[in-house]
Length: 242
Image (cartoon, rainbow, N blue to C red):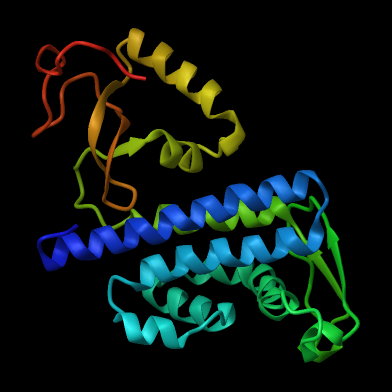
């Protein structure tokens, strides 16, 4: 458990992102089996955990708890924190996923309202109707959700001082490099090839800079010389990674 306020913040954020990634992977499995409603609910949980992870930096636990599962409100707060005007391109996806917070209960009033959810692999968000109440048809687009997840990850790790060398675990490197999580083995093989040619370095254990979480798994960084504060290859006790 963390010993300081800073460590506790990092631990909390990392825990939210860890749970979010587990929900996200489960959602992708549901998509592959065309379980639309289950996929939507799992995607909703994933985005909720990612957003609350970022909001945990400045928002106390009780305030985050009061958000309940209201994804639209979390998204509004996240955009204020991020300060990126182009995030509005994900508004349709967020509004669509927000519907799934009530669809987990078949007899909930919102669930009883006729709505059609269709899995789609579109690359751009469709235009929204004038009124949310007019919406009867929703596109659940895994490609757009993947872009949303990748954007949250990148913004969450965008507060490093200029000139510092960022280090990533394999999972966060996959997100940043737009590699599907199902292809981590391929990414690991590519990293090994880069390391053999001196294009990157790796070690087991340390801090991943994406969300400042500690891991005992492989870490990768981009320069062919040891990072400041990290052991040189001769001090790593043998074995290369990954």
